[in-house]
Image (cartoon, rainbow, N blue to C red):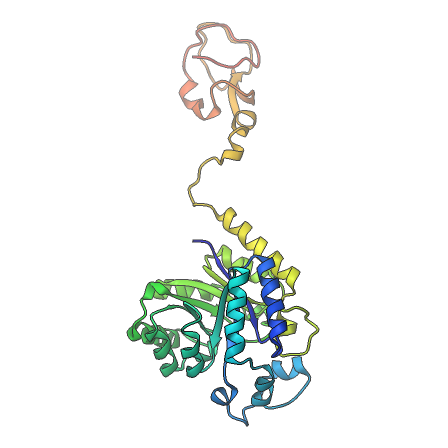
Length: 332
């Protein structure tokens, strides 16, 4: 199974459906498997007095309530119907993360995979609802500990979703995530503890960490992208631009090829090199018929034919059946 790459458009459309369509175009060009948005009704998601996260204030340069910020970024359900149709036309998978229960029910008819954000890791009734849909689930675990992950996983399974249809994503919710806080090995801890498919939702700058995650066994990669990092909005600065997204996809697909099947054997491309590079047993000195082969009259050199050096111990002590000149390939 190839790595499932999600281009996280998120809220980088700035509440404009035309920008959202342009993001879909760029995601398609980059070669990702899915482009993902976020669906919510602001009044169902947040109170009017809830404060922004520090990174949101820093990135927007505007200090306002979460409610006011999110209301400006909200798309309507009709917008999402249109974006789903546009994705179908472009032959790219549409996904959107629901941020409250009404939107989750709305998205049920638009997608077969539900990505649940880190903020819902401890939201038991929400997890129970999504679990009851019996769809494939990708759950981010940012800000969580192992006990919280276990409870969330059990909640989803008990609600009706099979474990094999769940993927847990290691994540850090700081935008951008400092390298010292990535803790990529935690992904392996999650995989081992729960015997489950894992992946990584990345908020670092650049593309190195998702590539590293794939090399460690991530089956899903999620990465924010934008049309322009200089646009106004909370997530643009920690997102990839379209060319960077394309570079990441190319790198991940190359890593997938490079990982191979794990069987140690000569590859087809290096088979011709065996005769050229490996050494064979040849005469170090002139050897007369009847002489015993020994380390004193034999050596190994690149020849391109003859008995390979790995048979050295088999040849030593045998009797020469003919005369050999210096560098002549030994025959027995």
